[in-house]
Length: 223
Image (cartoon, rainbow, N blue to C red; front, top):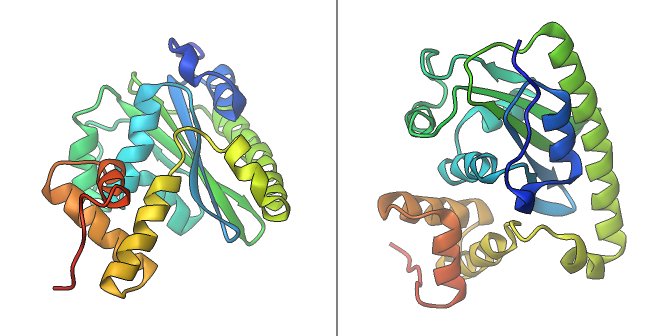
């Protein structure tokens, strides 16, 4: 049985991510929120690799996090380097370049409401035991309620967003998406797709491309 994990970087400690790492035989955790009243927001990460894992899947728009969101069921990949990744082949290849061996993703849901997702990873290849899965699901339920409360709070007090938003939030990406939407006279979905495509073709992260758009050093034009 693997030992419970722990963060070696104080910059990422604290919050609900630390709860998952302390209670489960994993190395790290990341949480992102989704909500009708709040664009997707990066909430926390236990370490840099957890943050990168979430960012990578956001950029590629595929991976176990998206499968968990789509199916509303946990996605457990205990042997990342030998399990097939037919549902997310591009992300699967990218994940093999990272120093991790297992990924466990749990959707954060309350009834019919999709609240977010928690991504757990381990540097050791191994399955989560039944009790570990139950603990993870209980923590996911607790996190979902906490995030829903925050979303409702932010909806009532928009001025609080700047006070509580994570420094790793995707606010700049949402701003850039709006600018590209106006430039192309398209939808938000199409604008974000163009951002992701540009990032992929130029070997950048979506966050870096968004910064260029916001700084007006990159302008998209209709094809």
